[in-house]
Figure 1: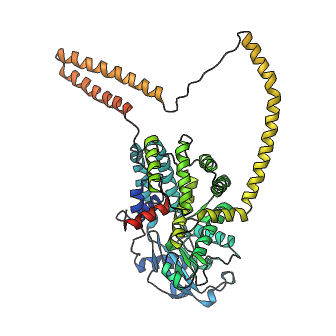
Figure 2 (figure 1 turned 30 degrees about the vertical axis):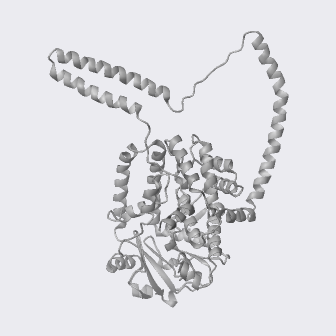
Figure 3 (figure 1 turned 90 degrees about the vertical axis):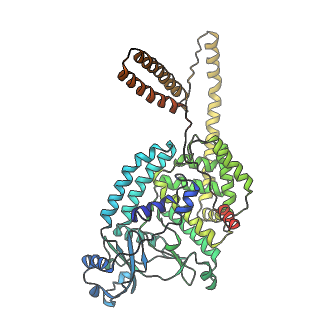
Length: 509
């Protein structure tokens, strides 16, 4: 991935958050993949700045030509604005961070995206239907996301939207955009210093309550996803910092997303079910949003969810129980039951990364307790209780109406039965395609028998070329017949539990 360049580094980072596509061994390795791309030469970056803004000396009072951050798609420099160029709308911003897109990155990304798109049919040949669903959505979502990440005008718009959503909340800080010095390829924003959020030792020295920071971080992302519908989608430690007052700073809004109303509603249902530890409610929400296959074994998935909740609460889990469930999954499910629709890809990334950051800050962080407190304070649980009461009353009314109609219907049925005028229709469901497999085996078996017989006859009649053709035909028919007997195969994926994995690694170390 590193050798292939910027696009594939981004793809590797995205794959590292996708347990529905890759098994844990790959996830663990790709999780270590960072933007290890040296910054472009200053002269190239300078040409872009001056082409879009004009001479640097006229636009900036000072400009540090050493990049403070180098990434696969762009790089960031520190600078200072001329006092006279500061607009009142920009609240007197003087110290700024200037984000510059890499030279010629657009053509390189488009070429790489074509390679990924052309390679997809080959990859889909080797995976099962469920993973094919996720892979196709992943390719579409990745292409959309990386193009959006290169559009700095969109990033400025998302940054300002999120900043306004947190206006007045002194737990968070987001940079101010300097519009006069920004464009499609350059984004100039307020420079805010802070301690990297996973630098635990530095936070301890500054006397910052790490548990409170973890809770505020989880709270922020729940607000963004469930209330605002616009969220910062790249919360890895390099994009999060903590000020001396304990306020969380968000950097780099290139990867940002929106949540539509339907998905928001289902995410709220999911969190409420998690808060109530309602396993059936969790599974129903996952099925409705399209993440969990309706054909999945609910008994096995319920056990997986119980352990996931236990892990989210920071409770110890017996290893034998995990091994038992993994064994059940491998024995009973050939096709991985989780799928990921396009509109949930970034939401899953956020949930996965934020949980990791929170657990790094506080090993005993209780995600469910924080989620419950948020849902209660925002009134979601109370509203759900009211809806449940209204639905129950309506269901009781319908039940009463149905009871009044049962007697005449039963009487009519008995009359028809007495007159020998009652017919029963039976439909055979075949969700696993058993009849289709049997039909294929029968046809291929007949063709193979015929071709082998023909090959023998032609050989006896001294027609070697015709016999060779019959043999080749027999070979291909035999392969098709063999494939109908082969069990479905896919990359084995196991349920992953963050804290359990961390404890296991610590013990191994």
